[in-house]
Image (cartoon, rainbow, N blue to C red; front, side, top):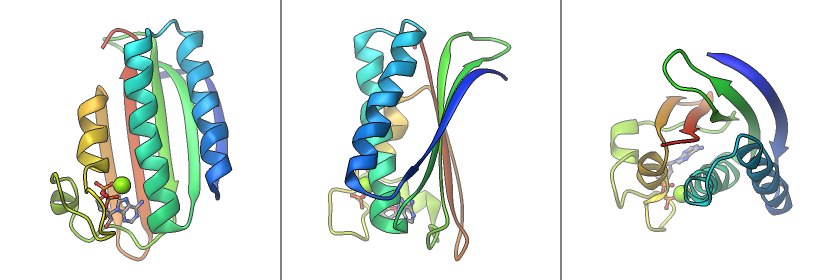
Length: 137
Ligand SMILES: Nc1ncnc2c1ncn2[C@@H]1O[C@H](COP(=O)(O)OP(=O)(O)O)[C@@H](O)[C@H]1O
Ligand SMILES: [Mg+2]
């Protein structure tokens, strides 16, 4: 994967999420992503950054414009936190599973909205989630 441009920021409070969403939109617009895919990407990213804030007390996001071997013009976003981690990823990825008494649709919903979804988590260490949304997909 070739990285064409990137930006990195911390998410420690609600306002950071607003700044992040605006920055993400700028990147999506820069590669000419259509409104529907922009909205899918931003909705997924909002859920994942909200989880980071809620369950891990914050973390960092890395936004990148990428070109792959098969597909060009993608936005990749990596969410990294040093929170408690997720003990059972399979369970956490199921619709309706929540330890926070909310809808439990954040992770599975985000996965459905993007082209690529990768989650790694270690209990006591933290969680890293990477998503990619291609311009045409
Ligand atoms: N960054 C994270 N760190 C630790 N646990 C997380 C994180 N993100 C999600 N989780 C866990 O996965 C569960 C499912 O997340 P999600 O699908 O967004 O549903 P909800 O946020 O409504 O609970 C959460 O309830 C929480 O237990
Ligand atoms: Mg959630």
